[in-house]
Length: 163
Image 1 (cartoon, helix red, strand yellow):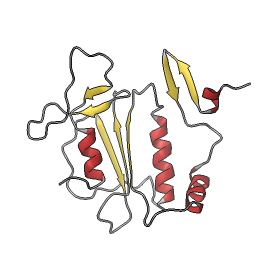
Image 2 (cartoon, one colour; image 1 turned 135 degrees about the vertical axis):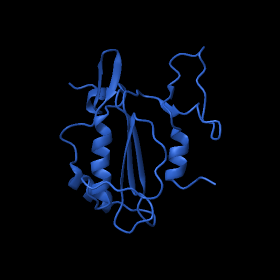
Image 3 (cartoon, helix red, strand yellow; image 1 turned 90 degrees about the vertical axis):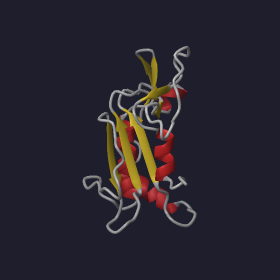
Image 4 (tube, one colour; image 1 turned 180 degrees about the vertical axis):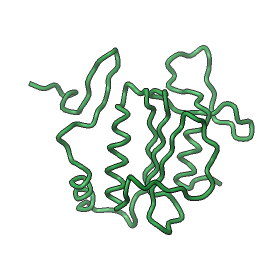
């Protein structure tokens, strides 16, 4: 008999619980059909996916699955990322891909992969014009890491919540 954790795609190894997308689930086309059948508020949701490549809690491969699912839902191609507007200065360890239809003024799906970053909230302590969190040396396992850019500001900008 399978455990509830294994049914949900959770495995424990190397002292970490790891969440993986189950194989045998929906592929991009099946997932798109299921979402399209559901009731939606007006418009289609924009999606921001941020994932650390060294995350041992959520399998980094899930970010690619989510990107494929949401771009398929929006009718976009994953082999054709686009750039809209000014690129912020990104640290070398952040890889950004955005997807939108031709003529759009905002990204519909954005994926940011943070190289060698685990299961943390990314902050930037080095920008005095835009303070973004702090890491307290006395605290361990805070799930906060200074990666050179602010995850909260990234999300606020993507969702157009900035003033």
